[in-house]
Image (cartoon, rainbow, N blue to C red):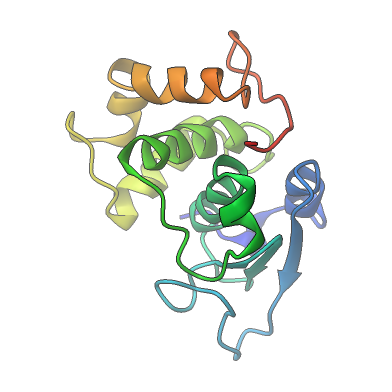
Length: 160
């Protein structure tokens, strides 16, 4: 499993900063503010993402993608529980896989393996099978909300 500590310095901040997200590093012995699942899982409070060195990258990307995919009203009051519906959750998973390609130590294949190891569940049995063969609805959701273009490239904007 790829951890935040496996990334190059500032790499996560550089990526997520494009969405006006700030990455806050928490000391190893401290709890993670805004973590729904508890440490070492990432936490989110408004536009602040909280991680530790032992936070899995898939967790950091997942919380960040919830921020990116939610509407402005929810984003303003965001604290720990990201909410959202089934379609948004699928879009979040799809987008986190796409964004993993912008982190040198990760990429789609590794992120899907990490998602499977953590316990994400998909109809086809794996994140990679879902992403490649069963995620048209998530792709369409992201495209319709102008978060990616038709070539699956992020637009570097957040949902309005």
